[in-house]
Image (cartoon, rainbow, N blue to C red; front, top):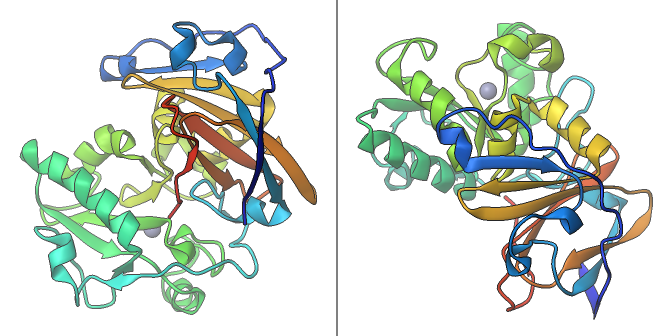
Length: 307
Ligand SMILES: [Zn+2]
């Protein structure tokens, strides 16, 4: 899918002025978001994530429809021919979700998503919040159709329009009551962003998401995206639009510097990305791709394989 052609030094040409945005907040002070290109990165040259030699990455429009940042909603369905995730059945593999309740024997999740979720739940347990229950994971489009027929549009997205259909999200409950009030729900709402997850349908964004408040539905987008979304108070619809509008932003999360760039893609396109450090590429399921780069070790850019 990705051909690494050759390393070539390319200077990032545009030096937009940049603005520090929303620096208030306690723990969120660890998250800094700046607009503009990496050329304007403040601080040591060696830690500038876009610094140094660049290489060309050749992609085509198929990349628009793959990755952790796909926007799936009523207007943007699961892409036709999308690769369905490999999943594990949690009832058959209880050791993979030790200490976490499983609603029934139908719950399936991609193993990578599950391990990220388990890592987050371990952190919650150290805070004394430990009565989590996974109520739904990956759902085939057929299963989504059944659910939609049974529950109606208020409680389920139409088949082919749900993040569950690609294994990008899971529903989480609490053994102590409704997620809206339970400590499990409150903990996740406060902390999920630190682990790459976002509360996908918050109460104050129903007009944008088109979905009513779902305190149980958590979507994986990965860092730094979850941190930026939390900091800027964006849902995914707003975030992908923002990236498109800005072209490039920088973020520092817990000391790691990232550059996030949006590229429109029509047919084939070459992207220039730094050789040093790591990169991650995801489509937006609309018209382009988002490239995230970070780190500056000189061992060569390593692709971080998405879920
Ligand atoms: Zn859900």
